[in-house]
Length: 372
Image (cartoon, rainbow, N blue to C red; front, side, top):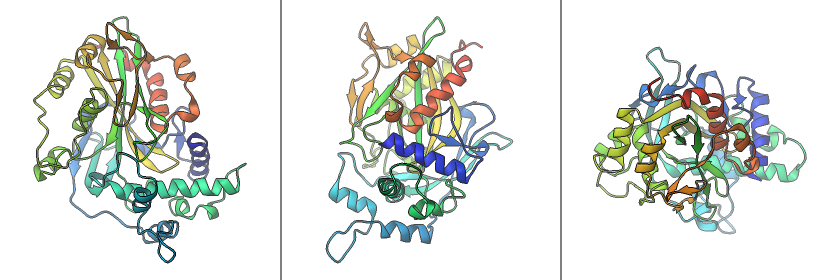
């Protein structure tokens, strides 16, 4: 049902804002302002910090509260996250500090520039999940066809500009398609089947691996500034999702030691060219209006096999889809149009589907020898 709802939401937003377009036929949306003209190395994306309060859209806030279920006969839950925690609490459900996207300039003359500020994870849950459930309720009343904007008043507030960084809280995730490049120039990829009982969002669908919120890994105020770093976010997610390390939840004051494996190995691979990380921009998930920063990491097979020799079959968030193992090492699924077409479209997350389409479109760039 998530896939069907995403299709409906994508059609609604494209009709309202024709500049938006699907990425390669997926439900993931973007426009010309949400991407550089061509993919750029992740290192070309500059990231800055701005310590300002998050915006609050009064009407959106009121409408969100109006949709909340009742906690008692006389009182509704104060927040969507409160209702979710009480009525359908997933195993991983913490109001962690997160980095809010305050500005994004993908067309800046000096290169793409992102500005982040402080935020909290439940701010995303309160807004995004409420918007998604509003659409689900509207389609139940009209199962065949697209519901009117009148039946989705929360979504209608963001009709003209669903991104609205100045009007709503946007806590982006970093979604990375991992590609293993073999010596003959072929590629494979990996997915994560997200466990519906474990995760707060995107349960039961196939997502990119790794993927995670852009968040600090420690309560240290210094870490907050140091961890406003997309590559550090991606590295931590590799450690957690492919190597099974405990999640760096930011619940202590101890900072992550990026001089130790696997971080040191990942940094060395990036430095010597056996790992290349490309950034394609950012996409909008139409169902819940979440924003995902879109990256593709291409590992030379020998490097990948060393770093992920002990790759796990499952982690705290779900199950690693890794294809067959050769000599104990995961090898992935073929990065071909035929293989991608065979995937269950309705069970693919918007970021996973969009990233795979981008990888196919730019296959020659991604799978070119590292020396080119």
